Length: 181
Image (cartoon, rainbow, N blue to C red; front, top):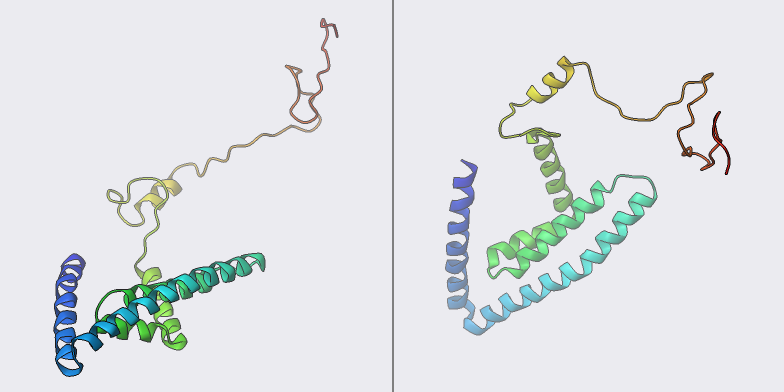
């Protein structure tokens, strides 16, 4: 269903954009319409070039303060989307881009997107997500003996056999029957 909607949008949006451009061209003239499209495209380029460095800076600041950089990354993502929409020729996408440039609207869209994504997202570690049903992988793991944790250990109060250099200090002490030469 979602593919059908996306496919129809990919057909309908350019046709509607073309119809709007033709009507605007009839109303204000061809060259002012072309100038409007070119101006919004350059504005999109400026927004994308400026915001890429701003997003990187704010993301690094959030990480250095110990905060997850979700808010700066989402804000930057929607600013980049606004810039890309301004780059595309057409006035309807320009209106959407201008709406995304308004911070309260952009933040509301980001909150809605995150809620929607978290509600419909499915995480899978290992396995085949196409084959596994939701929750099935977790049930299989908990039905077994539990997770396997690999590591090294040393029992206190016992001496380890000398089979070569130890990892810790790199020295080798000869055992009985070995010489130091």
